[in-house]
Length: 128
Image 1: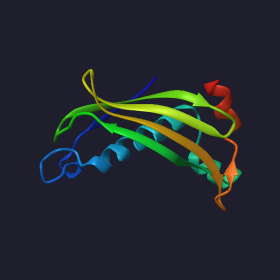
Image 2: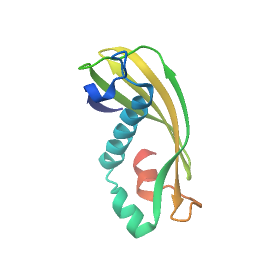
Image 3: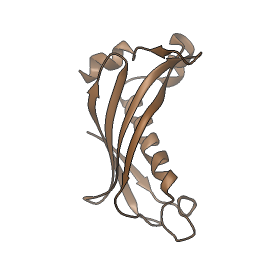
Image 4: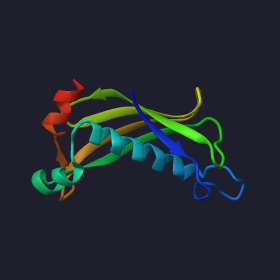
């Protein structure tokens, strides 16, 4: 399990003082990017050398509780499944031990032209 800390800043909140719903997607994106880096992959090098990038194909999200300014949160990321072309992750935003947001994210790789590509071999080897 990958853990990524987040602090809620004023800019993350809406007029009611709670985290704006779209910002949870930013939080889990940051955690996924950190997870990729921890797997030893350089996304800039992937784009430049292999001509591929990660893209999100699908997100299913559940907003369970609200977070507020200055809350200390943690994004927990777990790989649910992986094939040669698809990576499915479960991501939870936690406040302490409370799950406040949960998402299932499907990511794939595409070429510069937007055509499907296989996930990097080094990622497939590390995760399986």
